[in-house]
Length: 52
Image (cartoon, rainbow, N blue to C red):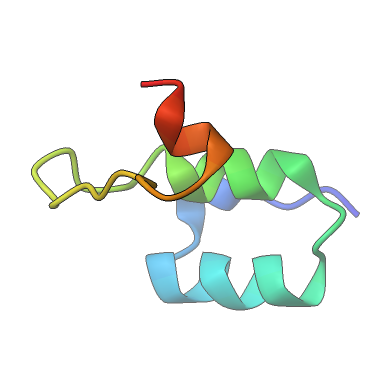
């Protein structure tokens, strides 16, 4: 199925991601819309957090 993700609202993309978890293209599209001013949290108590 070929969808035009640019035409979908953010809530439509979220719903589509939940229904098609294996579709990395739609996940990339959703993540590209994230707010760059949003608060980011580190994973301090995990191996991933210790790398940074």
